[in-house]
Length: 166
Image (cartoon, rainbow, N blue to C red; front, side):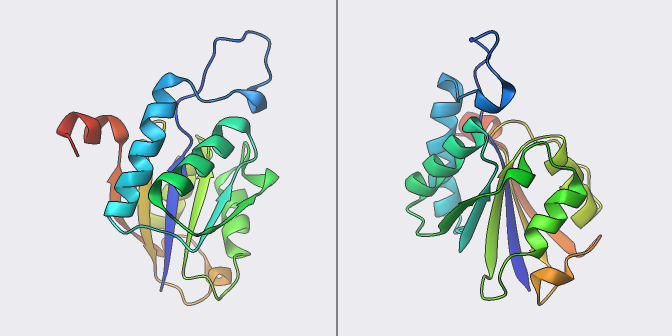
């Protein structure tokens, strides 16, 4: 049994016309939601052994802030394949995680992560910015990752949680 956490990058800025999509940074809302999500992830004990993030600026910022605000000591890696990834590309990235790792987090982008959640759990779930999903994988080795091998445990959407006063 393995645990996979999937986090969509937080809200990014569109204020700089002409800036490449890859280089867009978090906006104020994203900078507020990200540490909130990190603290919530820690409270719910969803701390991964490994965090693998897209190297796009908004995803990198999200991964670093969540790692710091959750107090996680997870190893943080960046993988170019996560940027604009299809569900199959995300499956490949996760299937290469070392077997000594029991829980991993992917920090990425839509629509790929929504498709990846559907691939793993057969459930379609909207993933707004900074949304987090916990999935229990019914596998012993990451390399065994396949369709419908996961059970969706929880979805945390920051807007809903902030409204509820979590």
